Length: 351
Ligand SMILES: C[S@@+](CC[C@H](N)C(=O)[O-])C[C@H]1O[C@@H](n2cnc3c(N)ncnc32)[C@H](O)[C@@H]1O
Picture 1 (cartoon, rainbow, N blue to C red):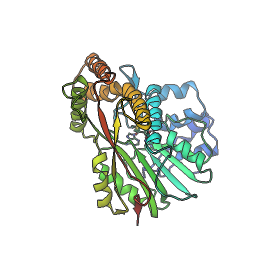
Picture 2 (picture 1 turned 90 degrees about the vertical axis):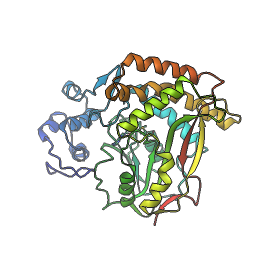
Picture 3 (picture 1 turned 180 degrees about the vertical axis):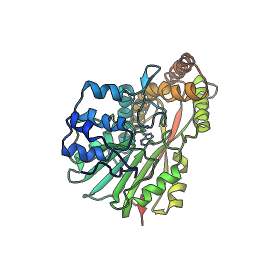
Picture 4 (picture 1 turned 120 degrees about the vertical axis):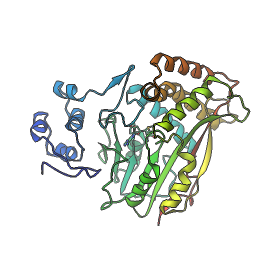
């Protein structure tokens, strides 16, 4: 095994084999470690998931700030935390997405035998794990800046640390299906990301993008003048100033078309932020949305407002508490729009 190799993002690696051996990495682990980009800290991070020891813990501590932890690799790149509370929120968000798809993990007509699938910015890894369970013969990969995914996963699933905005090097072995969900606030250059996805999807393969318009609104104007509306506007403005797109949903169709995908038809879903909807499905969506928003209000705002806008953590907490209070008010009927591919025959296909 060479001591230098190409990572998924094409970066050269120089791996300290001695540290690997000290940490009990065998050949198989070494192969996956070789795929990890620099710096060595990340390499150690990978080791930690295999064989915890004090030396690794010391080297790998995720940065802590205002009671939350954040990713260590390319520190500061993503502004939401990566701790258990956030992972729990992402799992609730996943439950809401599956409800929105009437119990399905995806809707693209990928057939019964996908061979290679990528879950971009996999988060807690829950989508990738369920997909890998469903297709045990498919090689499933999930990438993320944080190595926070479970250690016990289906044997056909591989998680790795990577920056999805760096150059990809999957062209030689393209995917049958690329899944990209809830990347708002994560990606600065969506058109570039989508071009990379196009280049790494096999001809006739599929991608499925699903994302937010993070602007809060209400049909009956009940959100107007509320603390939640004001906090939502302040937070989104700060993200935009810092170069992050918090509302990629409405632009997905245009970006996918411009990139050369075919069979595209975007659809907008209204996701109520509390269970005041009329039918059963809306109520379920509202319950899940309420819980993930409840957990997410402060975590979404804390780093962007304290690091970029000079807010004190206490002021963020006060505004977050007022917003959570509004979310509990049954007279306030807030909605967020979510965009995804609508149904069979209308999926994003690479010609
Ligand atoms: C909001 S979460 C969504 C997770 C998952 N896609 C889902 O639907 O549950 C966004 C994830 O993107 C990851 N992320 C942010 N920027 C990234 C980047 N440049 N490269 C890889 N992962 C990134 C974060 O660490 C986080 O886990």
